[in-house]
Length: 429
Image 1 (tube, rainbow, N blue to C red):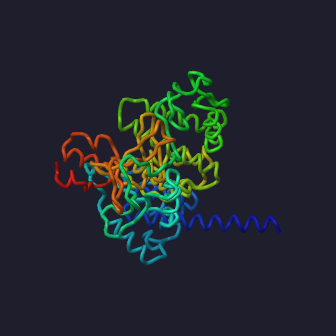
Image 2 (cartoon, one colour; image 1 turned 135 degrees about the vertical axis):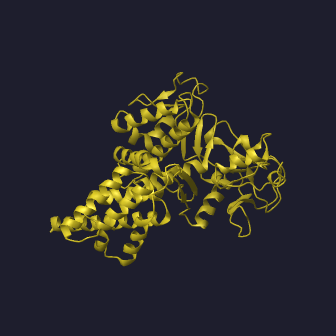
Image 3 (spheres, rainbow, N blue to C red; image 1 turned 135 degrees about the horizontal axis):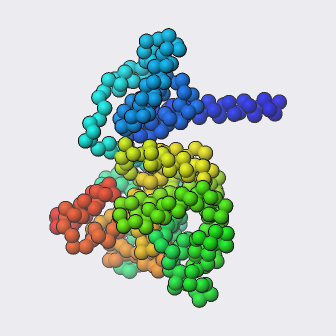
């Protein structure tokens, strides 16, 4: 009976996975995210190579992403299927009439011209209910004041959407929020891999190289407490001494990060941060996008559909295997990229993701700023008197508040998918 029950559960799980892959493939093809759709199509066809609907959808998505080998393979496969089934056209094998007509239209559309950029976008919305997020922000506010001075609000009439607002009058210089990052990624070995503190300025009990991981000797920390915390939270999953596959991949990312090409270095930094999030999820036995402090964030990313399968798709496979995340697909990797790139704080020693600080909106004339010696003890302080009901605003990038032109500032804002409506930008100064 136990064996029969196990076999039934496995069969049910397989059916559910097939349904999920089909639904996601069709959904993203309908939304114009052809690279993500192609990833789901490939995964389904690896399980069911005679699925006529997916073979035709694979041909469509491959054509839209210039994957000529995939397009030819899907076409040849559904032609062989037609021969076996003694039919003239694979469309006749598609049972759903609506999908059959849609596929017919898609197959008749011409492929994109060679000189057209295949740019696609992915948008990630928050999963956490607003009251839960507001409660979390209230806890952060109580770290600096028994009675919270600020709170998370979502005014319906505001062009900013949700943001941090003053609940009472706040004098200049007052600390109003205290948050700690839930992910950091250092840029070099002179900072702690867990908190970004300078290792060289750490306590005299540590060596010049800091406190290193006793297993791999690769990661260095400013203290034993940071080393132990890193091991508990994520490093036990991705330590080079126990995970050779991950070690090989991370080494290649470190080489890419060390290049003189800013775009490649930034991409490598984001990849390493995404991998750390996946490692944290594995330790907690969760899916990465289900991590509590990620569920409240929003993000957006742009990717090249022509190269996404070979680059992002390959990354998804590598991280899924090396970090034991069975259902980690290209959609999830791109979603994590979107959350990291939209919410990252670039610091002197690396980048950090904060929960509460991610709800702060931008202004080229900010009324708030951060104080603190490292990523772990940063506090939000108001730079002038704040009236009750006024929104707290920071500068997302130091370059946005320097003496650059309005057009240059606008271009920098566009890189993070928003438009600034501060007085300075409204005046176009």
